[in-house]
Length: 99
Image 1: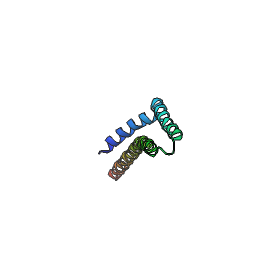
Image 2: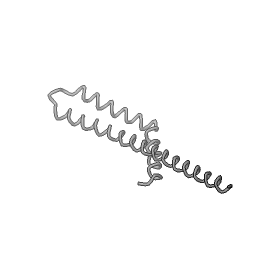
Image 3: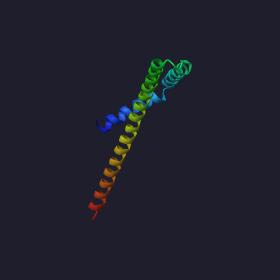
Image 4: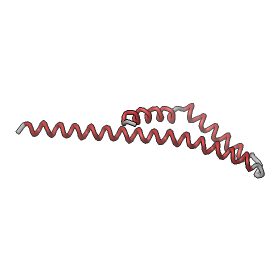
């Protein structure tokens, strides 16, 4: 994946993670699952395992989006660094040509 694609994907992930509707939905679903787990009888091992799987999957979605966001941030820093090096090299060439 190119740096530009990482930046684009990171920006899209940021839009999702910063979206108040996504945050509200995520928190509501998470709380619903936690409440279901708390209310489930201890003998319902299979049902509790399903709830655990759902909670794990829900967290994986958020982790994936967060990872994509961080990858985009790193790609953006890399692009800025490369541009900075290019600008400095270009400025150095300009000053050398003055001699």
